[in-house]
Structure formats: C-alpha cells, structure tokens
Length: 299
Image (cartoon, rainbow, N blue to C red; front, side):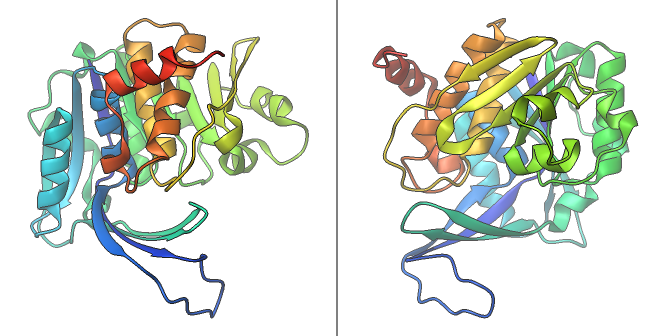
C-alpha cells in the first residue's frame, strides 16, 4: 500500500504550433481542461498503471475546480483524503502544448500551499506505518514535505521524493529520503552541473537516485550499482504528465517487491504510453496496457 502526499491541480491546456517566446503571442488551437498536479498525477499512475492500493493526501479549495480532480482520482482507484482550504482556489496549471509534443507549464499553487504538517494525522489517513512507500513532490510547502519525510523515515517507511520543481533542498530532508527522482535539470540544480550524469548522481547523498532523460530513458544509482533503462519508441502526442507517470509506476512496482531494474522498465513503459495521449491523468495507461506493451518489446 502506497501513500502520495502532494499537489492537485486543474490543468488548462491549449495546443499551438509552437510554445511562445518572451513577448510573443501565438494563435492557439484546441483548448481543454484536464485534472493534473504532480501529486495527483503520481497517485493516479500508482493506482492505475501500477495496480496497487493508493491513498493520497492533498489540499483542495471549495470551488468547482476541485470536482473534476476528485472524480479523476476516484476513477483511477485512488483513495483521496482531501483538506479543504477555505480562502484559496484549487491549484491550477496553464499549459501550452506544441505540435511537436513539447510543453511549457505555469502553476498557480492555490490551495496546495495550505497542506501543513498537522494534516498527516488529522484527515482520516490510515496509520503511516501501514504503508510501504511515501511518495512526494515539491509543489506543496517544503516544510510540510520535510515533516512528512521525517515521520515516515522514523517508522521505516520508504520515502520517495520527486524533487520537482527544482529548488535547493536542506540536508536534513535529503537525510530522510531513500529514493530521489529527478530530471536532468533538477539533478544539475542539486548536484552542480559539472561532470557527467554518473558523477552528478554520485554527489547526492541519497541511497538511490534516478534521473529521467526524456526520450533517452533513465539512469539510476543505487549504492554502487549503476542501472540504465533505454526508452521505448512511441509517437508522442503530449509529454505532459509522462514524468509523473514514471514516478507513480516506479513506486508501485517497488512496493510489489520488484527489483529496481524491473521497476525502471515498467516505469519507462508506462511513461512512454502516457506520451501517446493528451492530458496528464487522462493519458495514464492501465496496468494491463503496460503489461501488454512490455510483452511486445524486445529489450
């Protein structure tokens, strides 16, 4: 059983020929809203793509934006423990997706900033010790992330942190993290830009560090072990949520006692499939789809 603590947003998505530069206005195409937020995306991936019992702790506003998020998480099989923040709107994200499937995202955190350390014990969440893994991100207050990590670490729960969006992290927080997941930019922000990826991974004092490489797959360092998982070729439509799908699927696989190598392969497959559909949570594949996809791969 996995618990995810983190953000939940409603994504406002517009397609355009390319992502506008500074001062540029671009005439867009189709506009839609999708449930998103790194925390909610990862929880949905853990439950849907990973097939494990998943609880989520998140803060929402008392507004219409919350309803589609709640419905999406319920459809994915996530047990939501929602904190209602009266004076803040539900978090939102404004996303431009280009015709080559790249995206630019601006997040308005809103109610996500109202998630505080005390909520870990006041929302009806099962005892923390009943979970195998706690998965978090950095779209909620850093003090809250640190408090939850410390509480879980003290109970022997495996703490997984997706250090996104990139920011400086205190040594005390990293000391409570068992698995750190970053992309290349986030890795450079934490480890410094010098040296190759393995040198950067080695400089981070966390037992296991995974760096995602987009269309090139991922690398991992676990103790002294190095692992490489290439990407699976797909025709991308929208890369929004692919990294979150990777995180959720990875933690789900690890919670089922798969090896890190096996878990990385499942996570990369789930992320690849997520790139073939629009939206964040709406693009997350089912566990059956991941299994079928992997059965057709030769590597």
